[in-house]
Amino acid sequence: PPPPFSSLFSPCLSPAVTFGAAFADATDNQLGVIETIISSGMSGLIYSFLSGQPLCILGATGPELAFTVVFYEICQSMEVDFLAARVWQALWCSLF
Image 1: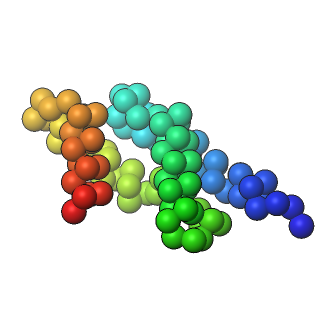
Image 2: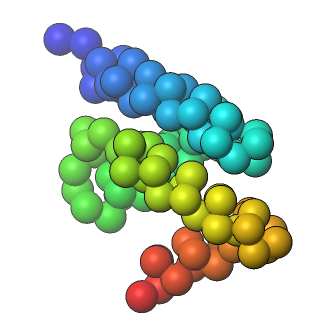
């Protein structure tokens, strides 16, 4: 059988590219394909080390895209920097 890395490469990469392009369209290129690939890779590594399940597919999903679009529009309407607000939102979610 093929090694797990090669068999999971396409299932992990294709949603990152697809949703990354959708993120780029929705956020005026503040988030895009490269950021989605990096975040999917980092979250996959952290999850595999801490959970003991190295073959779980993690990455962008439709509900996350919908939340990001709404969050971006709220930041634009309130004239708040989107990426700075996204960092604070990520810290809040990871700490609490």
